[in-house]
Length: 145
Image 1 (spheres, rainbow, N blue to C red):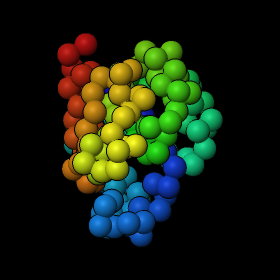
Image 2 (cartoon, helix red, strand yellow; image 1 turned 90 degrees about the vertical axis):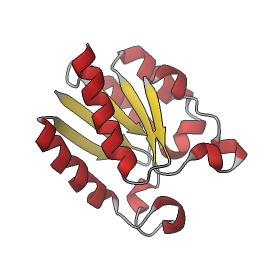
Image 3 (cartoon, rainbow, N blue to C red; image 1 turned 90 degrees about the horizontal axis):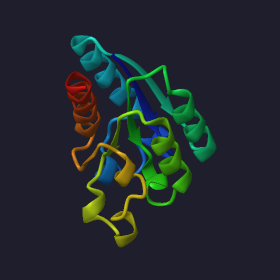
């Protein structure tokens, strides 16, 4: 199984950006944890981050035929990007939306996800563990198909 982990804007600042909300782990720390668990599960992963919406859309489009699942932390684009929503719907790759913080317990504008309706599920509020839960979710989805 191959899973693509995509990370949106400002996640490159993890560890220093609002650690009371997002934790003290860097994106590199989280990637290392995900890679270690993926190895245990026999899953090959590709882990990427971009601050550019178009680049994320391109990566989703290019995933067709190359990846069995996508784990997506779209960050702020979760609430604004019809382009990401359309790309996810177009490729028909099982996608799990993840967030470090509980987006439903934060500011009102964060409560609505434009991508959730085209994702298989959403995991939020578990800090870096959301990534590990996202990995487990796509493994389980892959086993069921």
